[in-house]
Image (cartoon, rainbow, N blue to C red; front, side):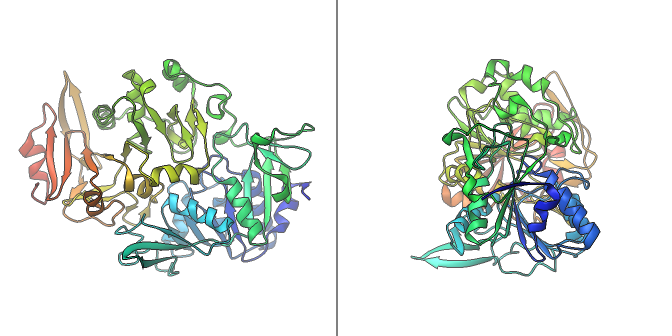
Length: 503
């Protein structure tokens, strides 16, 4: 039977060595009151310590004073398993200093592992990750010298290769909803994502753990059965917290209370306040050029995924060009329809037709349901492999990238040709490289493989690499120069800057 308790009382359920599963998509649906109470308890008592955090999407807000980063920095956490790390500055720092174990795995895989754990399974089989960094034949999922646990095994079944991913053992589930009814049922009407709340609660209960839910309000009315996300039978403790950090305040255009039609998308996009450490999206000419050109690959009827960063421009240009109503955009957090929100709100959807569980969204992605996707990239090599998760000692994390690019019919990478100092202008349709970036992004060898060109060729995927000056296409012989933008000098601005020969 659930109890309504204070946040301080709720975190008393947590013991040294526990694995905390966090149901969040970065800052979205993240139960900050629970994180804050846990940080305060650890500061006062030194317990609970030696904690593990399992969160498929990542649990940060680009701010060291938000969410779990507080008690990670204090030393309460010894191990983190996630897919996205850029939003968690203290986790990245502690991993870089080799003070905690840190494991990076594909978001869709971790989401499916959580669902498998809810069913009492010890592992999850997938082809996603083969020939990528997570493959034990390459780097494996550990991101520093301390992270040596073998979470992934290569197996062969019926003559085919698979990766076998170990499922988590959840002791504590941290979940944020909106309302608790008299029976402890939890609804999410003010949340813009559901993530995998039910699977997490089931996985904790299957392991004999506890489910703690933060909500905004208590209702004397019983919830409609179809609106319940987590049933009261799974809930142990409910913490009522009416206040929320600015980064996750209720927004009716993201929760679906205002269903935004495509004809009004530009207006409502302008009303969206994008706050937090990622900041507002500033005008960036290379990104504008890339977004506009990449958007021309869209066709009426396409089902689409748009990634974070430069690819966010594709959705905006689809809206400006008036073709948004002819597309179905999706985001890995679970949004279907509408337009993915930018900045720190990434994962939410403006005007969604549906918000499903993350695991269900990845069922669709893994099954090849997407017609086209637009992804960012840190660097690409001469064969067409792409590194999208590792930049020196910094780990952006793989996020949903590996799953999304593994089966989508057309993959469009949106990335500048060089970086660090690149300045570009465009006038009368002609592009000029005002100042070249100091670091090339297309090179003979890259630091890690997030996307395998070999896999893509075997699957028959069409793959493009759109930059601010040209477009490359993947062929069996490597990268081919498919298009040079007006004003760009092919030899001086492209070929002379590559350390390999184009196909």
